[in-house]
Amino acid sequence: MGLMNPQQVEREAHRAQANRDELVERIARAVREDGTVEPLKGMSLHRVSWPNAPVHSVSSPAFCVIAQGSKEVFLGKERYQYDPYHYLLFTAELPVVSQVIEASPERPYLSLRLELDPTLVGSVMVETSRHPSPPNHADVRAINVSALDAGLLDAMVRLARLLDTPAEAPFLAPLITREIVYRLLRGEQRGRLCHIAVLGGHTHRIARAIERLRNEFNRPLRINDMAGELGMSVSGFYHHFKAVTAMSPLQFQKRLRLQEARRLMLGEDLDAASAGFRVGYDDASYFNREYKSLFGLPPLRDVERLRAAVGQNGGLGAD
Image (cartoon, rainbow, N blue to C red; front, side):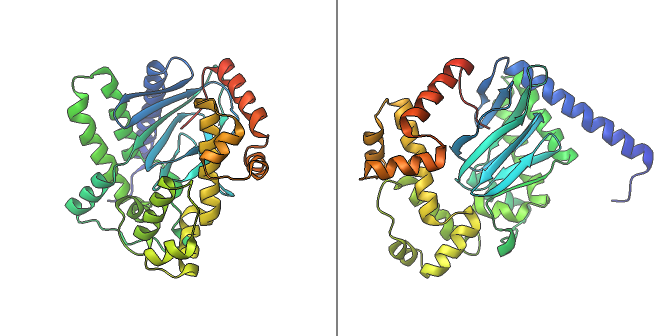
């Protein structure tokens, strides 16, 4: 494709801005109060009127676009910030900390998150004969931010338009989602989609390790056994796991345990000792120290603060 002349560049810029404005309008109309809704399967919309406190959660493979405002996400000590001109791609289940950093009642943070199904990603790879090579070691992290190009933005706007035509959505939404995956495969993050389709290199082994830790986080972690079952040396397993997740297996397990303990105290009204024991901590004082190190407050005070925040704001933010 040749270079565009100045008039074409200007037209494309106007079109992109019109699409951004339309996305803002449609999300704001669909989510009139702060919170999250899932109007279509696999697609969630989010609204926040104020910069919020850090939110601990476990990501899943997803394509995330901001219509208005900005947000930062931390994976370990790595920071990723995105806005209406950039998208965030998650390619594995990871314990992350996220925070809306730009929002106001006049211009609330508005975002759209689209879950990416591994089967669909693999199917599009096969049908388009686009089997991206695994990313090199320096670029293997299962999260990254890239510029949101005009094609991806246009597809997201068309997906949002389906909110007004629910009868058409079951047929058209899968087609547009497929187009989005296709466009991602053509972009700079195409290699990272290997994580989702579990193709190539050591990625499939690390994906299996992540899934096992997610399912068995409350059991003792035996690195030697896990590495052996995956057909990797202990040092190799540790090295590749940290390259993908930005954490050691033990740090990863610890975050999963503490996030689940927090959920149990909030959602099931468990006391700290019971929640700690449920997620694998035999020593209550050790659990309290670990909890405070991650969340900044001891369990009881942290849960009280979160409940007060929920009462004031009607919920805690997500993507």
